[in-house]
Image (cartoon, rainbow, N blue to C red; front, side, top):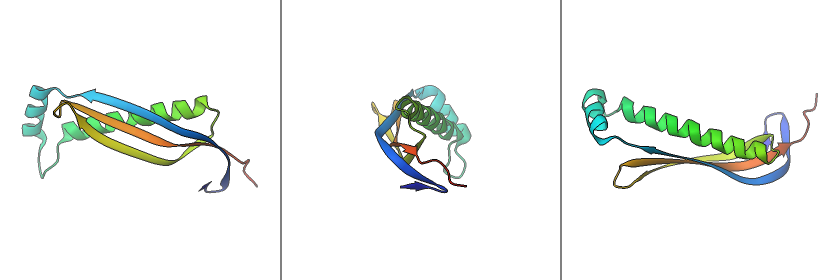
Length: 103
């Protein structure tokens, strides 16, 4: 594994971040009617972005807690839960320390 200009010194292990967001059925139905143009819903896209930011932030915090310099091999998964009443966003990756940069 490499990061441009840097090499991995040590793997600290797999780190995770999760976000579970509730969906307000009535608000989301109205948002769907209002936002869906060409097959896209701005309301749901906004919720997914929010969930992704939370999950990545938690993953990075876990990596920092392990003394890592970076997270590589990041994977982000999205799931609906509870008959589509909840959205779950999970981020995972490998926390690593990096060799000092060469000049």
